[in-house]
Amino acid sequence: MKHIALFVSISALFFAGCNNNQTKNNNNSAIDSIATINNSVKKNSTSIIPDPPRNPKLDLLDSRNGFRDVKLGSNISNYSDMIKEPYGTYRRANDNLQVSDYSAERIDYYCYKEIVYKIELEFQISYIDAGRMVIEEDEKNNIFKSLVIQYGNPTDTIQSEGQIQWKGKKVWLCFENSNTIKDIPEFNYHGLMPTITISYINPYYQRKLEIEDSVEQYRDSIEEQKRAEQDLHKPGF
Image 1 (cartoon, rainbow, N blue to C red):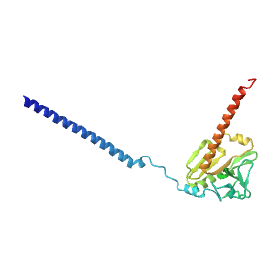
Image 2 (cartoon, rainbow, N blue to C red):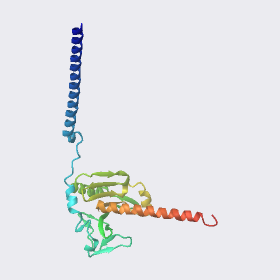
Image 3 (cartoon, one colour):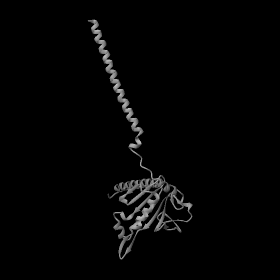
Image 4 (spheres, rainbow, N blue to C red):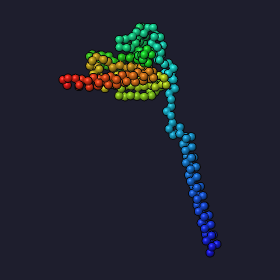
């Protein structure tokens, strides 16, 4: 009987060992399968979420880095014919307003601490005929098409502001149609006409300016709040 019991115990241990080995093998197989799937995902991750194709024509926008001989990021003092306007922008004394086949109303140069960060061209696309305003849609469309030919399809559209943008690595180009702004009837009422604005922008300096403006506005609001609190403690309140 002792021999039979010993045999049964050994058999039980043997089969238990087999089951444990099978479980381990199953676990190892599962781990290997997961590792294989992970490796496959890593190898093919670019095909699962591909990067958007870069528009090579934006390199031309970056290489020009401005308009004509005025370069974004350069010091305004490099251009001896610049005249500072009362509202802070600059214009050239004898600037050529003829841009390709179109005549610009104005060309303005914006600076951040004497560094040119934006060049803005404005084109009139409307006129008054027999007391009513006429918008020259063909001219507007042709200006836009000329930009597409040079720089490819736009990268961004902000419909609420009537803006279409081309964003290079160093330079952003913004095409803005004021005729799409919702309150344009009010503009017309005050005598302002719909226009097309083309802006060449250095996003780095524009962002710095926006941050500084936000900080200044915050400081102003704090000072205004302090004055209001002081007024509350004055006699008569």
